[in-house]
Length: 98
Image (cartoon, rainbow, N blue to C red; front, side, top):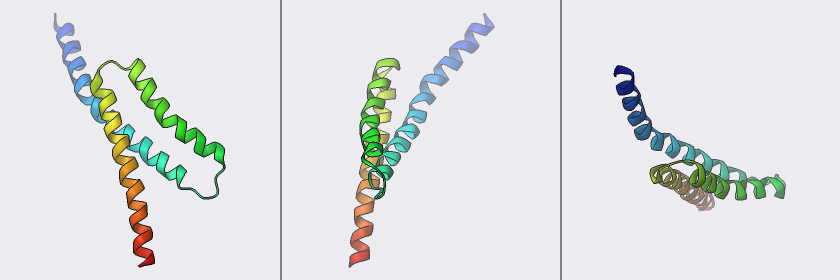
């Protein structure tokens, strides 16, 4: 009886911690996407791989991971990173010009 309770508690902790880990992964994936897309001397192959890789990560998470919270947190993390680092780069260029 005791091991079943321990497994139930560990399963609950896994369901609670998984979205936070996926949020961090989403931020990292969004940052990597923006970093590679803003590189100047890279070929089109790398940009295409990153451009298609981010939506592929959404598809793979939606297909193989149970629960909508995981996919939602990945979307929030990746969306925040793309918007934040995409807009932050534009602000730095404007401040350097003016």
